[in-house]
Length: 76
Image (cartoon, rainbow, N blue to C red; front, side, top):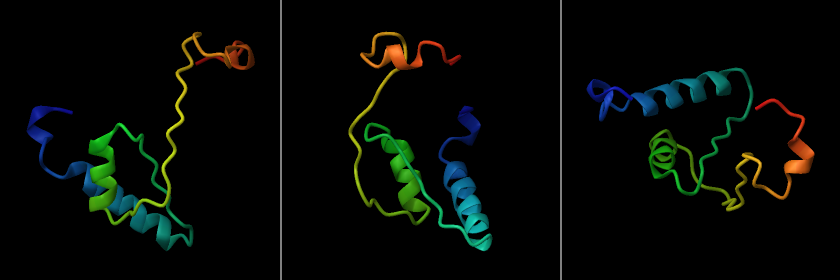
C-alpha cells in the first residue's frame, strides 16, 4: 500500500462497504484471514466480524508440497 494511504482505515472502509452490500443482497458475508495476518484480522474486527473458528492448516503450492501430485497440471 502506498504510504499516503496507510493509517487511513481504507481497508476497513472497503470491507465494511462490501459487507453492507452483501447483506443487502440477502447473503451472509464471510471473512477469512490467515492466522499469521494480524493486519487482516484487525480489519475484519473493525468491520464487525467476529472469529468463529481458526484454521491453522496452510499449503504453499510451490512444488514442495506432498499434495503436488494433485495440482501439478494446474496453472497457478
